[in-house]
Amino acid sequence: MDEQSSDSNAKLVREHLLQGEAAAATFIPLTCGAATPEEGVDEVAKQVESLAWPASVVILGMGGDGHTASLFPDSPELTLALATEELLVAVRTPSQPQPRITFSADRLHQARRHILHITGDDKRAVLAKALNGDDVRQLPIRAFLTCPLAIYWAP
Image 1 (tube, rainbow, N blue to C red):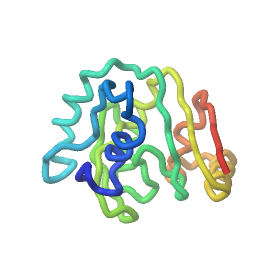
Image 2: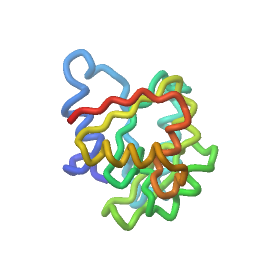
Image 3: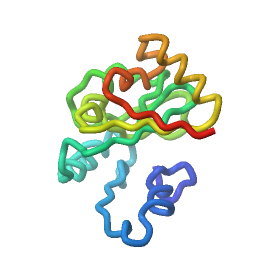
Image 4: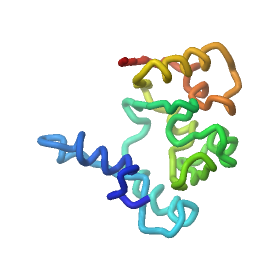
């Protein structure tokens, strides 16, 4: 995905978080110039491998469909992304126009601390549903509900 796209998380990070003294932070977007995520995943992995790991903290969001970290319930690559020990996975999903590269669930689980940030009553209801079930393929956020997780909700 082009970093200038309005859907780009990298664009949001640069515009809203990497400001002032934070502009000096090391930021590696999960994008590259490759034509497809499948072609670019190795290139991006080489860049990400330079970061200290495990991460001190992973802050997750959650979509209204229960996805998190580009782990979408309708993605053909979801089973792979949940099971692999690889660092990154190229994912596609019918519900999203942009294919993307994401961290595997295994790599995200290795972080020392996990935080979930959600907003709105709709997402709060999805989280409640996720807490009352165990099918990770239905609501991928469930993959992170078994580890210590601080949850922050704002109306």
